[in-house]
Amino acid sequence: MTVLKVLKSVYLNKDPLSLVHFLTNRCNARCSFCFIDFDNPLTFKNELTLEEIDKVTKKLPKSLININFTGGEPFAHKNINEVAKLYFKNTDINSIFITSNGSLPDRMINFCKEITNKFPDKKLFFSLSIDSFEEEHNKIRKVKDIFKSCINVFHELRKISPNIQTNIAITVSHENHSRVIDLYDFLKNKYGVNSFSAILAREEGVYKIPEMSKKKILKAYHDLTQKIKNDLTKMSKEYGYKNSLQAKVMNEKNKIVYDQIYSTSIKNEFISNCFAGSLFGVIQANGDISPCEILDDKFGNLREFDYDFTKLWSKNSRKGFCKKIKNNKCFCTYECAWTFNILGNKKYHFDLLKGITKN
Ligand code: SF4
Ligand code: SF4
Image (cartoon, rainbow, N blue to C red; front, side, top):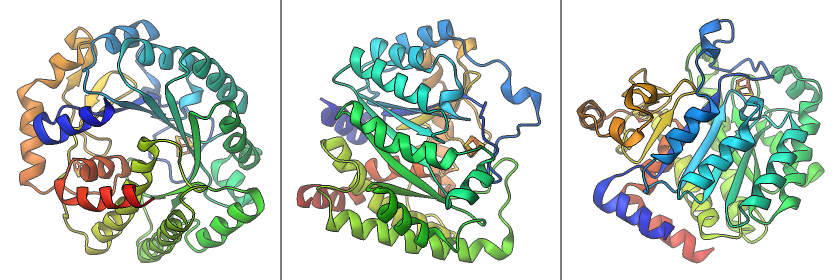
C-alpha cells in the first residue's frame, strides 16, 4: 500500500507524501546554532490547539504516508501524545518521525508506551541529537545532563516495541567540526550506539556560520558521512534503522542524500529539482503552510481555509511556487527536502533500488 502510494505520487500526481509539523517553537534547550528567535515573544504565539489539529487531521490528503514532528522540542508540547493519536486515528499515515533533543525522557517513554499500545502496527522513528562529548554537549545545549538523557532514551525507547527505531543525529557545526569523527567512534564504542545520521548546520533565522569555518565544517561533514555510509554497508543487518522496507529505503536514501548535500555545498550549485510544495510541505506551529522551512514563502494559514489542507494546497499560488523553484533551480542543503528530491526523482531510483535489494 505504502509503496503504491509512493509510486503514484512520484510518477503520477506529485501529491504530498509527508508533512513536517512544527508542533511548537518552545524548547527547554538553547543551542548556540539554533535558528529560533527565542527572544521574540511572537515566536510562541497562536499555536494550533488540539481541537484545531483534530479538524486539520480529518481533512489531510490520503496520499500521506508519514508526518515529521519537530520544533522547538516536540516533547515540550504538553499534548504530543494526543496529537500523535489524532494523526494515527484520522489519517492513513503509517509512521511518525520525531526529531528530539532527548532531554525529556519520562515524556518520551510515556509517549512510546501509549502510542504503541494503542496503535501496535504503526512505526515511530526518533532522531536524537548529540553533537559533542558529554560536558561540551551539555554546555552547548545549555541543559544539565542532556547527554546522558539522550543516550538513555536512544536505548530505552527501542526496548518498548520493535516498531520503534532510534538514531543519533550529529549536527556538524562550527563548534564541533574538529571532533565529530572522534565523537562518532566514542558513541559507537563506549555507548553502543549503532545507528547514526549526520546533519549539516545551515545558516538560517538568527544563526550565521563564521566564514572561516565553512570549509572545515564541510570537510568534517564529508568525513563523517563516509564513515556512516561505510558502517551501514558493512553492518546493515545490525546497524542503522532496520526491520522494515521503509527503514531500508531510509538507509539507502540517506547514503545518496549525504553525497548530494556535500556536492551541493562544495560546488554551491543546483544538482536536481526540489519537490518542496509538492511531495512535501510544512505545517508551522501557528497553522501557516509553507513549502519548506528555509524560504519565507507561505501558501496560507489553515485557519483561513476552514482547516482544510487540501483546499489550501490546491491554490494557484502553490502551483506557481513549484514552477518558480523549478525554473529558478532553487537549491539548499535542507535534509528533509533532499529526502524527497531523491525519492521523487527517477534519476536516483536505480541506485536506491540497487542498495535496497543488496542489503
Ligand atoms: S534543541 Fe533544537 S529547537 Fe531546541 S534550542 Fe537546540 S536546536 Fe533549537
Ligand atoms: S531547494 Fe531548499 S530552499 Fe529551495 S524550495 Fe527546496 S527546500 Fe526550499
